[in-house]
Length: 68
Image 1 (cartoon, rainbow, N blue to C red):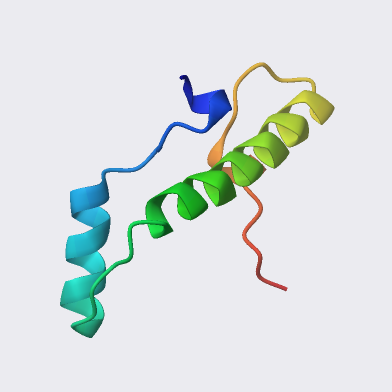
Image 2: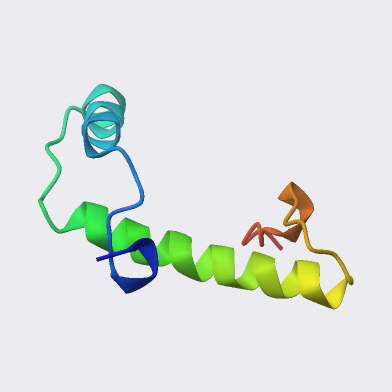
C-alpha cells in the first residue's frame, strides 16, 4: 500500500500527543486515516494549483487555507 492508496500520512503518536495536550482527550483509531484523506485532498488541490501556475514545484501558496 502506498500513500495514494490509503497509507497513513501522519505520525500518529504526534497527533495523539497534540490532541491530548491541547484538550486532555483521547484519539480514536479512525482519526489518523480520516486526517490522511483530508491531507491527500489538500495536496491534490495544491498540485493542481501549481500546475495551473505552470510550475513543477508545489509551494506553500498552493495549499488552500480554507479561510475566507
